[in-house]
Each structure stands twice: as structure tokens, then as C-alpha cells.
Amino acid sequence: MNNTALTDKHISLGAKMVPFAGYNMPVQYEGINAEHQTVRNGVGVFDVSHMGEFILKGDKALDLIQRVTSNDASKLYDGKVQYSCLPNENGGIVDDLLVYRIDEKTYMLVVNASNIEKDWNWIQKFNTEGVEMHNISDKTSLLAIQGPKAAEALQSLTDIDLASMEYYNFKKGVFAGVDNVVVSATGYTGAGGFEIYFDNEHAYKIWDAIFEAGKDLGIKPIGLGARDTLRLEMGFCLYGNDIDDTTSPIEAGLGWITKFSKTFTNSAALQAQKEAGVQKKLIGFEMIDRGIPRHDYEITDEQGQVIGRVTSGTQSPSLQKAIGMGYVNLDKAKEGSEIYILIRNAQIKAKVVKFPFYK
Image 1: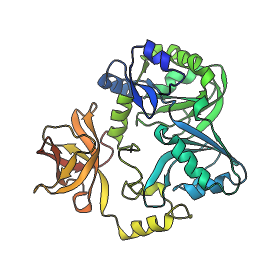
Image 2: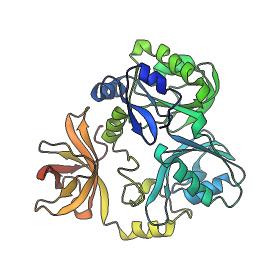
Image 3: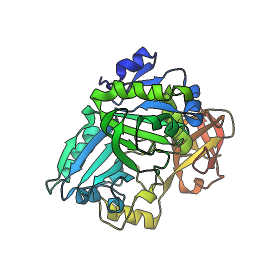
Image 4: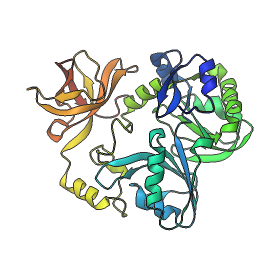
């Protein structure tokens, strides 16, 4: 089991630790609901150092990224971030990722923890032009400071003007006395905030500085349990649940990051799928009758015919109702459609709703 640079810190704070993507990670501290509300209404800190980071450098770095990712990275400028995915050759997704343009010839790719080796090998397979690749995952720490009070909590630690930083932009600078920190206006919660990348050796210093700076705002450490409920309220996909090697970006509602203005892995087949229309689609639903949907539960129509399956589900702490995501046949994907979730052999009524659940 891998540890992050802050594992001992989480244990000392009384976190409940669980194995996740090969790492020993904090799932909760005081409880998922309380931590969820801390981030929605104030500010909380996630240790997400298990995520992977690759640096791509050289004259052909952009060319390689363009060939392996679905979004159009030529639109990036220095300090801009882009959400994208790595399509496979069979219509599915190798991983979803963030692409950071550091300069014209230098990019950072941020990938999911469980896919670090898979993604590295996949990109390397297409690296025919000698792009310099560095896997810096093991030496890089990543903290996500999320919530409406995040900028206020962090501003005393840096000269970077956090309040004016636009969504999906980043700057490199001094943070908590540490040089060369990437401060990025990104996150996976829908609550606003920042993600900061730095070398492992500075982890304790930066963690302690953040909690000291934000103490008057009630800043708290947050586990992966609340990260999941927060992202689900926004309808954000989780790799391995809502998207995987068998789901296409078009089916997953990720057409907006699939740009056919360029050629990339399997782009012709995906374009044909977009033009012909998909047979199944990722939808959001909320429960009408009492019951909590869980990953892999079957979705049926009124007659009990299986029409899909749940990919993610929970009791939403913000909305006080059960919500979920799943793939269903196209004829049941319209907003307002009644569907049923099979929970312990009982058909529990739900209805299709628009993303995000939390507005």
C-alpha cells in the first residue's frame, strides 16, 4: 500500500483510512455529511496526492497531446487548464485527465491514481517523435482547497491574486514560503477553490500553513467520502464508475470535450457515432420513492425490463434526497422519464433529471 507524504498527518488527526487506488487514504474525519457541508458552505482541504502527474516537453509535445486526447489542446495558452480524455481504439476511454500548458513546449497532464501506469504506457505508445516524458507522480503532492471561502483562506500565503484567477487557469509562484508551487483554480466539488501542486518535501510545511491561515474561517480536513458526494451532486464523472474502457465520451455526455477539428485516437469512429446517434446515454436521476441507488444496481422500466445500470449513487447531503447516475437506453433518457431502480429485488421509482443535481 502506497502512502502520501501526509498519511501520518491524517492518522494523527483521527481520519478513518481506507485503501484507494493502491494508496492508504483518508475517507472521513468527523463524518461525510459534516465534511460535505464544510466544503459547500466554507472551506475544506483534501489530500489528493495519489493523483498522477506527467510532464511532457519538447517541440512535439503539443502534437503528441493532440493525437492522444479528445479535446483541442491547441486552444490552450500559458497558464490555462483543459479537461480532456484519452480515447482508446475500441470506442471507450483510457482515462479522463487535465492538461496544463506551462509554456509552448511544456505541459503537465494530471491523471487518475488508479490509471497512472496504464496512462503512461498508453501515451508512451504514441510517442514516436521523441517527446521528453517525466512521471513526477511519486514526488508530487497535491492538495485541493475547496469551498466559497477558499481564496480568503489562502490569500495571506501568496502574492498570486487568488480572487481574480479565472476558473481553469493557474499560476506558478511562491506559496507559504515555498517556491515553484502551481496554484490552479480547478477542483472536483463544484464549490470553487484551488488545487496546489508541490514537491513532497514541503507537504507538512504547506499543510500546516494552510490550516493556520484558514483557522478563523473554520477550515477543516476533508476525506474522499465527501469528495465523492460533492462531485456526484455536480454530475461529474468518476473514472471506473461512470466512464471506463467500455463507455464512449459521446455516450457519457462528454461530446463537449470531443473535438473533431483534429485527428486523434479513434476519432473517425467517434465522429460516426456522434452523427449516427448513440443507443445508450449517461443520465442523472433522483429517487421518487424511498431507497438509495448504488453502483451496479439494475435500472428497469415499469414492466421490469432491464434498460440500464447505476454507475454512481448516494443520499445527497445538500439536497436531502437520493440521487444517482447511470446508463439507460436512449428512449428512457429524456428529462422527466420515469425509471425504476432495482433495490433488493424491489422496483423503486425514480425520474430522470438534468445535471447538475445541485444548482
